[in-house]
Length: 305
Image: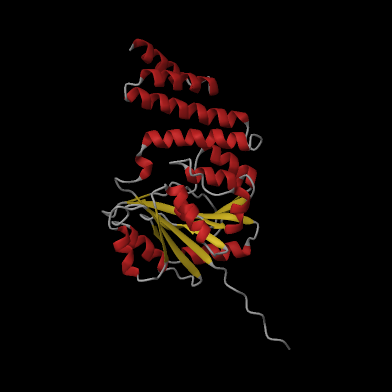
C-alpha cells in the first residue's frame, strides 16, 4: 500500500505598498506576519517615502522582502509587488490598515474549495486611532453567517459600474488572473482598485466572505479624502471600461453613473468659483442623464455669475 501523497499548501504573496507611512506601517506589517496561515511571503514596496518608513521597517530584520522605488503611485507600487510575487494567490494590504490573524487562512480554505472563484473579498470595518469603529460599508445580508456571497461575472461587473463594493485590503486574487485582466493602471491616481475589479469581473467570478477580517484606518492623510481627484478618476475608470466592455452593462447603467459623476464635478468646480468648468461638466451630465434636474440649477447658477 503506497503512502498518501502530501498536498502542498499554496503560497500566498502579501503586497504592502507604503508611501510616507512611518506612523502606521509597522502595525500593518505585523498584522500580516501574525497570520495563522503558514505559507506566505510579505513584500513591502516603498514608493519613494521621504519620512522614516524605511527606518521603521528595519525593525523587522529580514522578515519580509523590501523594495524601494521612486514615487510612482499606488498602481505602480502594487504592480512592482505583483512582479516580485511567487505565490499562487496575491493579497493586498494598505500600509495603514490591519488584518485579523485568520484572514489569509480563511480565504485560502475557501479558494481551494471553490476553484471557479478568481477573487475573494471579506467584510471590513472602519476605525480611528481613538478606538471609534464604524459599521462596514459592505452590508452582508445572508441567512447563514458562514455562507459566502458569490457573484457571477456579469452580475458583479454591473454592480461595479454603480459602486465599488470591495475594499482593496480585503482582497485575495489568483495570481494567474492578472494574465487576463492586466495589471493596475498607472495612469490612474485614484479609483485604480475599482478599475481592476471591473477588469477582473469582466472575465471571472468573485465572492465575498461575510466575516469582518480587515480594519480600515480613517485618518487625515487618506487619499480618498481628495474629492476632486476621486471624482475625476471615477469618470476616467467608467469611460475606459465602457470602451473595453460595452456589452457587459446596459447603456442606461453607464449613462446614469457618468451623469451623476459629471454633476459632482460641476458642483466641485462651482465651489472653487470655476464657472466655465462647472458649466461644461453640467452639460455633460445632462447629455448622459437628462433627468438630473440639479444640473439645470448648476447651469442657471453659472449664467447668473
